[in-house]
Image (cartoon, rainbow, N blue to C red; front, side, top):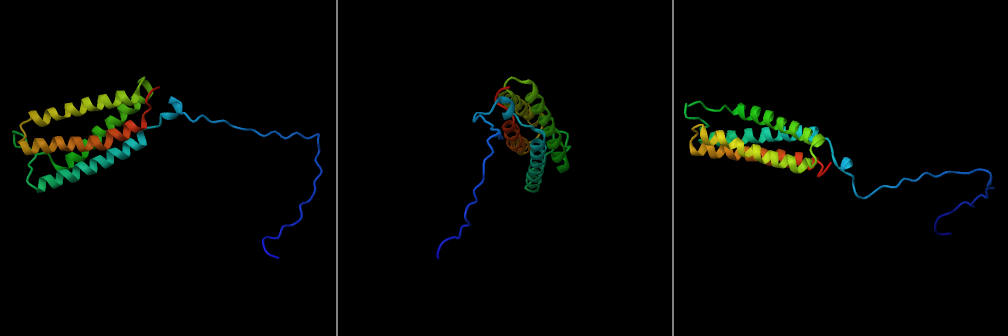
Length: 162
């Protein structure tokens, strides 16, 4: 006897007076704007930490390679300053994204445009505080590194429309 051994099926008597209700649920394949919107703070905080670590590591490498990060008065930016400022300013970005998630008609587009404007404004001190060209270029590069880490993470958590 090969194959599986099956026990004979028992016959059961059906009671016609009993009704069984089976609930079904239909789901739409197209997400609604409310379902598409997701909380940004957890991912935003994580990306802020990653950006802080990245900018600090890159600043340390640049400093070891001879970039001074000194302004026209001779005051130099300490390496820990990169960590602190990147973290604080990234968390401000998280707050901006969270507010836009709740208030903007097009949260993602509004956030990205706002972030790009703020990133451009962040270059102004690097270009006007008397940093030497290597320091200014490195600082601008570090702003871009932080933005490349934080902005797409936050934008990806925002709905296209509300």
